[in-house]
Amino acid sequence: MAFIDLAKQRYSERYFTEKPVEKEKLDLILEAGRVAPTGCNYQPQRIYVIQSKDAMEKAVSTKASLCGCPVVMLVCYDRNEVWKNPIDRSYDEYNCGEQDASIVAASMMFQAEELGVHSLWIRGFDSKYVSDVFNLPDNEIPVMMLALGYPSKESHPAHLHSERKKIEETVQWL
Ligand SMILES: Cc1cc2nc3c(=O)[nH]c(=O)nc-3n(C[C@H](O)[C@H](O)[C@H](O)COP(=O)(O)O)c2cc1C
Image (cartoon, rainbow, N blue to C red; front, side, top):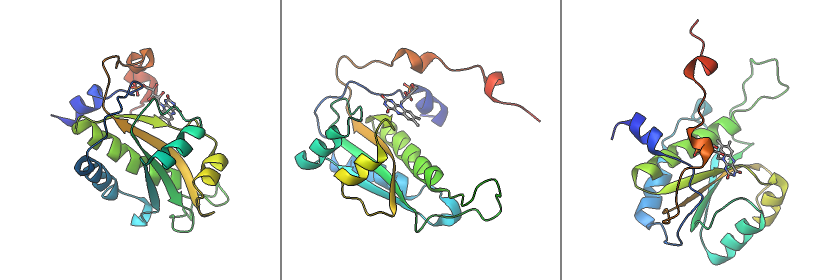
């Protein structure tokens, strides 16, 4: 499938089944994240694969909208290993951690889609709570959770999925 078709096919899944995602598929999804570009190739991403009962209970306690998914990738970055942009004077200490974590997560999201594994990008959580509940080291900053799994019969795109701005509203050709 052409990438543009894959990108249009994907939608945020909010109706997962309990069916586990096969280990080989999770490995491939993680591999897609591994080869993603990062600032200066520092690869500061730190990914927690949450699927045990104990870890899932912790994830549910964060109140993130997991929607019954069987597995979640918690994507963080290590602020001690992230590339800091020295020439941008608009910020005291700009680092690329959120960008790095996001491109890693996006790569995993589209790899999942190609494998027929649906996903939901989640940022609706409290970072401090997530750090505490998973006992993350102080240098690891949680960025997002990627819920993964298979769609149930009720699966459908939410109305926002079809509400995309016209290209002229977001793009300027200079
Ligand atoms: C940065 C970001 C944060 C998001 N956080 C959440 C979230 O916490 N909960 C949720 O249900 N969806 C979340 N979403 C999914 C968006 O609501 C969704 O992508 C958007 O409405 C477009 O719909 P679509 O993904 O079906 O095309 C998030 C997406 C992004 C990119």
